[in-house]
Amino acid sequence: MKRIHSWGIAVLVAATMAITIPAAMAHHSGVEFDATRVVELTGTVKEFQFKNPHTWIQVMIPDAKGGPSVEWSLEWGAPNSLGRQGVRPTSFPVGAKIVVRINPMKNGSPAGAFIGGKFEDGKTIGTWN
Image 1: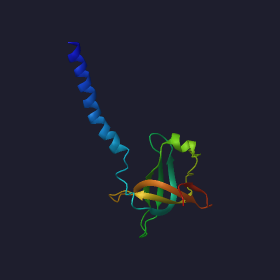
Image 2: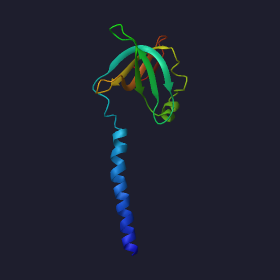
Image 3: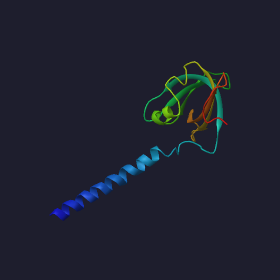
Image 4: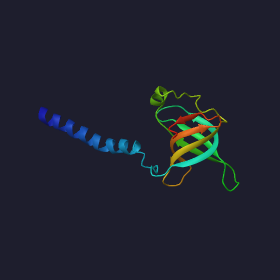
């Protein structure tokens, strides 16, 4: 009986891992971003969400055809690791003019993976080469 109980637990653990590991890997893979392209956008910071599990920078980008501005959502790293690099909740002041470099979404939606930014005063944040 003890052997059957141990076998049942092992099967349950294996099944749980088989279900959860692929989902976790997909979530952290960044597969939705086009890592082969870097796009540069100029806009105004709307909001900086400095909270787990990832930070988000909301930037209003003027429409190239003169229409209303489009809100772009830029995903960055975890607050814990960014904080150790000197990034703070106040690092992206609302209303600040910024040029951002991102890996855009593969599906063309107004979002991407944040690479780096440069403010009007020349201050840079992230990777800016």
